[in-house]
Image (cartoon, rainbow, N blue to C red; front, side, top):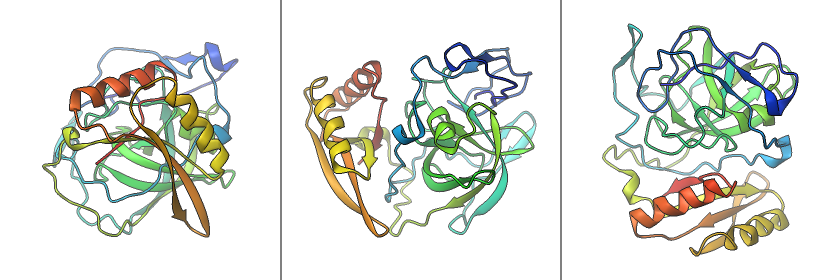
Length: 269
Protein backbone atom coordinates (compact mmCIF):
# COMPACT_ATOMS: atom_id res chain seq x y z
CA UNK A 1 0.00 0.00 0.00
CA UNK A 2 1.24 3.47 -0.65
CA UNK A 3 0.98 6.91 0.79
CA UNK A 4 -1.34 9.48 -0.61
CA UNK A 5 0.88 12.32 -1.70
CA UNK A 6 0.20 15.72 -0.20
CA UNK A 7 2.33 18.46 -1.67
CA UNK A 8 2.46 21.68 0.26
CA UNK A 9 4.94 23.52 -1.91
CA UNK A 10 7.54 23.00 -4.59
CA UNK A 11 10.57 25.22 -4.97
CA UNK A 12 12.16 23.13 -7.70
CA UNK A 13 11.08 19.90 -9.32
CA UNK A 14 14.36 18.10 -8.98
CA UNK A 15 14.70 18.74 -5.27
CA UNK A 16 11.13 18.22 -4.08
CA UNK A 17 10.03 15.50 -1.76
CA UNK A 18 7.32 15.60 0.83
CA UNK A 19 6.75 13.72 4.06
CA UNK A 20 3.04 12.93 4.40
CA UNK A 21 1.29 12.40 7.72
CA UNK A 22 0.72 8.78 8.77
CA UNK A 23 -2.01 7.27 6.60
CA UNK A 24 -2.11 4.44 4.08
CA UNK A 25 -2.30 4.35 0.34
CA UNK A 26 -2.68 1.40 -2.00
CA UNK A 27 0.11 -0.16 -3.96
CA UNK A 28 1.50 -3.66 -3.93
CA UNK A 29 -0.96 -4.85 -1.31
CA UNK A 30 1.02 -3.92 1.84
CA UNK A 31 0.08 -1.13 4.25
CA UNK A 32 2.77 1.49 4.89
CA UNK A 33 3.03 2.51 8.52
CA UNK A 34 6.27 4.51 8.61
CA UNK A 35 6.97 8.03 7.34
CA UNK A 36 8.53 7.98 3.88
CA UNK A 37 9.20 10.74 1.38
CA UNK A 38 7.78 10.82 -2.13
CA UNK A 39 8.13 13.39 -4.86
CA UNK A 40 9.01 14.30 -8.42
CA UNK A 41 11.89 12.70 -10.35
CA UNK A 42 15.12 14.43 -11.29
CA UNK A 43 14.29 13.93 -15.00
CA UNK A 44 11.28 16.19 -15.49
CA UNK A 45 8.87 16.06 -18.43
CA UNK A 46 6.43 18.34 -20.22
CA UNK A 47 2.69 17.66 -20.65
CA UNK A 48 3.26 16.83 -24.32
CA UNK A 49 5.66 14.04 -23.36
CA UNK A 50 2.91 12.02 -21.66
CA UNK A 51 0.93 9.74 -23.97
CA UNK A 52 -2.65 8.72 -23.21
CA UNK A 53 -3.19 5.10 -22.27
CA UNK A 54 -4.79 3.32 -25.23
CA UNK A 55 -8.02 1.57 -24.16
CA UNK A 56 -8.29 -2.08 -25.13
CA UNK A 57 -10.19 -5.11 -23.80
CA UNK A 58 -7.50 -6.27 -21.38
CA UNK A 59 -8.38 -9.30 -19.27
CA UNK A 60 -9.24 -8.51 -15.67
CA UNK A 61 -6.59 -10.10 -13.49
CA UNK A 62 -7.13 -12.11 -10.34
CA UNK A 63 -4.39 -10.07 -8.71
CA UNK A 64 -5.57 -6.67 -7.55
CA UNK A 65 -9.27 -7.55 -7.64
CA UNK A 66 -9.80 -9.21 -4.26
CA UNK A 67 -13.25 -8.25 -2.99
CA UNK A 68 -14.05 -7.30 -0.35
CA UNK A 69 -10.78 -6.06 1.16
CA UNK A 70 -10.06 -3.98 4.26
CA UNK A 71 -7.57 -1.17 4.83
CA UNK A 72 -7.28 0.72 8.13
CA UNK A 73 -10.57 -0.74 9.33
CA UNK A 74 -12.51 0.34 6.22
CA UNK A 75 -13.90 -2.37 3.92
CA UNK A 76 -14.10 -1.84 0.16
CA UNK A 77 -15.86 -3.88 -2.54
CA UNK A 78 -14.79 -3.93 -6.19
CA UNK A 79 -17.54 -2.62 -8.47
CA UNK A 80 -19.53 -5.11 -10.53
CA UNK A 81 -21.50 -2.44 -12.39
CA UNK A 82 -18.87 0.14 -13.33
CA UNK A 83 -19.40 0.79 -17.06
CA UNK A 84 -21.26 4.08 -16.46
CA UNK A 85 -19.11 5.19 -13.53
CA UNK A 86 -18.57 8.94 -13.33
CA UNK A 87 -17.47 10.80 -10.21
CA UNK A 88 -16.06 14.15 -9.20
CA UNK A 89 -13.64 14.62 -6.34
CA UNK A 90 -10.03 15.32 -5.46
CA UNK A 91 -7.09 13.69 -7.26
CA UNK A 92 -3.57 13.37 -5.88
CA UNK A 93 -0.40 11.88 -7.39
CA UNK A 94 2.50 9.61 -6.47
CA UNK A 95 6.00 9.32 -7.86
CA UNK A 96 9.61 8.44 -7.04
CA UNK A 97 9.03 6.36 -3.93
CA UNK A 98 7.01 3.81 -5.90
CA UNK A 99 8.75 3.96 -9.30
CA UNK A 100 9.83 0.44 -10.25
CA UNK A 101 7.78 -1.21 -7.50
CA UNK A 102 4.86 -3.56 -8.00
CA UNK A 103 1.33 -2.20 -8.23
CA UNK A 104 -1.63 -4.03 -6.70
CA UNK A 105 -1.94 -6.38 -9.69
CA UNK A 106 1.78 -7.15 -9.92
CA UNK A 107 2.68 -4.76 -12.73
CA UNK A 108 5.62 -2.40 -12.34
CA UNK A 109 4.75 1.19 -11.49
CA UNK A 110 6.15 3.65 -14.03
CA UNK A 111 5.82 7.21 -12.78
CA UNK A 112 6.02 8.57 -16.34
CA UNK A 113 3.15 6.42 -17.70
CA UNK A 114 -0.55 7.31 -17.75
CA UNK A 115 -1.71 5.10 -14.90
CA UNK A 116 -3.80 5.51 -11.77
CA UNK A 117 -4.95 3.95 -8.52
CA UNK A 118 -8.60 3.64 -7.52
CA UNK A 119 -10.21 2.03 -4.48
CA UNK A 120 -13.06 0.12 -6.16
CA UNK A 121 -12.78 0.09 -9.96
CA UNK A 122 -11.77 -3.29 -11.43
CA UNK A 123 -8.13 -3.65 -12.46
CA UNK A 124 -7.46 -2.90 -15.23
CA UNK A 125 -9.99 -0.21 -16.15
CA UNK A 126 -9.51 2.72 -18.51
CA UNK A 127 -10.81 6.12 -17.47
CA UNK A 128 -10.72 9.69 -18.69
CA UNK A 129 -9.68 12.09 -15.95
CA UNK A 130 -10.39 15.81 -16.41
CA UNK A 131 -8.90 18.60 -14.30
CA UNK A 132 -11.90 20.78 -13.46
CA UNK A 133 -9.66 23.79 -12.85
CA UNK A 134 -8.25 23.96 -16.39
CA UNK A 135 -10.20 21.50 -18.55
CA UNK A 136 -7.18 19.32 -19.36
CA UNK A 137 -7.87 15.60 -19.77
CA UNK A 138 -5.92 12.36 -19.89
CA UNK A 139 -6.82 8.71 -20.44
CA UNK A 140 -5.31 6.51 -17.74
CA UNK A 141 -5.12 2.80 -17.04
CA UNK A 142 -6.14 1.89 -13.50
CA UNK A 143 -3.69 -0.76 -12.26
CA UNK A 144 -3.35 -0.01 -8.55
CA UNK A 145 -5.36 0.47 -5.35
CA UNK A 146 -5.81 3.73 -3.42
CA UNK A 147 -5.87 6.51 -2.43
CA UNK A 148 -7.04 5.48 1.04
CA UNK A 149 -7.98 8.99 2.03
CA UNK A 150 -11.64 9.88 2.64
CA UNK A 151 -11.66 12.99 0.45
CA UNK A 152 -9.83 11.64 -2.62
CA UNK A 153 -11.24 9.66 -5.51
CA UNK A 154 -8.14 8.79 -7.55
CA UNK A 155 -4.35 8.78 -7.28
CA UNK A 156 -2.51 9.50 -10.53
CA UNK A 157 1.03 8.85 -11.66
CA UNK A 158 3.45 11.77 -11.73
CA UNK A 159 3.20 11.78 -15.54
CA UNK A 160 -0.59 12.02 -15.47
CA UNK A 161 -0.40 14.89 -12.97
CA UNK A 162 2.01 16.73 -15.28
CA UNK A 163 -0.38 16.19 -18.20
CA UNK A 164 -3.28 17.59 -16.15
CA UNK A 165 -1.26 20.54 -14.90
CA UNK A 166 -1.46 20.03 -11.14
CA UNK A 167 1.89 18.43 -10.33
CA UNK A 168 3.11 21.46 -8.37
CA UNK A 169 -0.16 21.86 -6.46
CA UNK A 170 -0.25 18.19 -5.45
CA UNK A 171 -4.04 17.84 -5.67
CA UNK A 172 -6.80 19.05 -7.97
CA UNK A 173 -10.57 18.70 -8.41
CA UNK A 174 -11.25 16.21 -11.19
CA UNK A 175 -13.96 14.25 -12.93
CA UNK A 176 -13.29 10.55 -13.49
CA UNK A 177 -15.25 8.82 -16.27
CA UNK A 178 -14.86 5.15 -17.14
CA UNK A 179 -14.37 4.43 -20.84
CA UNK A 180 -16.53 1.53 -21.99
CA UNK A 181 -14.54 -0.99 -24.00
CA UNK A 182 -16.61 -3.47 -26.00
CA UNK A 183 -15.69 -7.08 -25.46
CA UNK A 184 -13.91 -6.74 -22.13
CA UNK A 185 -12.62 -10.15 -21.12
CA UNK A 186 -13.55 -10.86 -17.50
CA UNK A 187 -11.38 -13.95 -17.00
CA UNK A 188 -10.11 -13.26 -13.51
CA UNK A 189 -7.64 -16.15 -13.64
CA UNK A 190 -5.43 -14.47 -16.25
CA UNK A 191 -1.89 -13.86 -14.99
CA UNK A 192 0.97 -11.62 -16.03
CA UNK A 193 2.67 -14.69 -17.50
CA UNK A 194 0.18 -14.60 -20.39
CA UNK A 195 1.41 -11.20 -21.62
CA UNK A 196 3.59 -11.05 -24.74
CA UNK A 197 3.71 -7.35 -25.66
CA UNK A 198 4.72 -4.09 -24.01
CA UNK A 199 3.11 -0.88 -25.21
CA UNK A 200 5.60 1.94 -24.74
CA UNK A 201 3.45 4.83 -25.92
CA UNK A 202 0.76 6.10 -28.28
CA UNK A 203 1.17 9.32 -30.26
CA UNK A 204 -0.89 11.50 -32.55
CA UNK A 205 2.15 12.08 -34.78
CA UNK A 206 3.58 9.04 -36.57
CA UNK A 207 7.03 10.64 -36.59
CA UNK A 208 7.05 10.75 -32.77
CA UNK A 209 6.15 7.08 -32.58
CA UNK A 210 8.83 6.17 -35.11
CA UNK A 211 11.43 8.15 -33.18
CA UNK A 212 10.62 6.29 -29.96
CA UNK A 213 10.69 2.97 -31.82
CA UNK A 214 14.14 3.72 -33.23
CA UNK A 215 15.47 4.74 -29.81
CA UNK A 216 14.13 1.63 -28.08
CA UNK A 217 15.52 -0.61 -30.82
CA UNK A 218 19.03 0.48 -29.84
CA UNK A 219 18.46 -0.63 -26.23
CA UNK A 220 16.84 -4.08 -26.54
CA UNK A 221 17.04 -7.03 -28.91
CA UNK A 222 13.30 -7.78 -28.91
CA UNK A 223 11.13 -6.65 -31.86
CA UNK A 224 9.76 -3.08 -31.76
CA UNK A 225 7.02 -1.87 -34.10
CA UNK A 226 4.68 1.06 -34.75
CA UNK A 227 1.03 0.32 -35.51
CA UNK A 228 -1.91 2.72 -36.11
CA UNK A 229 -5.23 2.49 -34.28
CA UNK A 230 -8.41 4.50 -34.77
CA UNK A 231 -9.06 7.07 -32.06
CA UNK A 232 -12.09 9.29 -32.47
CA UNK A 233 -11.77 11.18 -35.75
CA UNK A 234 -8.09 10.38 -36.22
CA UNK A 235 -5.33 7.86 -35.60
CA UNK A 236 -2.98 7.07 -32.76
CA UNK A 237 0.36 5.42 -33.48
CA UNK A 238 1.26 2.78 -30.91
CA UNK A 239 4.82 1.74 -30.12
CA UNK A 240 4.95 -1.90 -29.03
CA UNK A 241 7.70 -4.27 -28.02
CA UNK A 242 7.13 -7.96 -28.77
CA UNK A 243 5.99 -10.60 -29.13
CA UNK A 244 8.06 -12.11 -26.31
CA UNK A 245 6.92 -15.63 -25.44
CA UNK A 246 9.31 -16.36 -22.57
CA UNK A 247 7.99 -14.82 -19.29
CA UNK A 248 11.52 -14.46 -17.89
CA UNK A 249 12.71 -12.66 -21.01
CA UNK A 250 9.57 -10.51 -20.90
CA UNK A 251 10.39 -9.43 -17.33
CA UNK A 252 14.04 -8.83 -18.23
CA UNK A 253 13.11 -6.60 -21.17
CA UNK A 254 10.78 -4.55 -18.94
CA UNK A 255 13.57 -4.01 -16.43
CA UNK A 256 15.99 -3.06 -19.19
CA UNK A 257 13.57 -0.51 -20.63
CA UNK A 258 12.86 0.97 -17.21
CA UNK A 259 16.56 1.16 -16.33
CA UNK A 260 17.18 2.93 -19.66
CA UNK A 261 14.67 5.65 -18.86
CA UNK A 262 11.81 4.52 -21.13
CA UNK A 263 9.52 3.20 -18.40
CA UNK A 264 8.39 -0.40 -18.05
CA UNK A 265 5.56 -0.19 -20.58
CA UNK A 266 1.98 -1.42 -20.49
CA UNK A 267 1.78 -5.24 -20.65
CA UNK A 268 -0.65 -6.66 -23.21
CA UNK A 269 -1.71 -10.21 -24.15
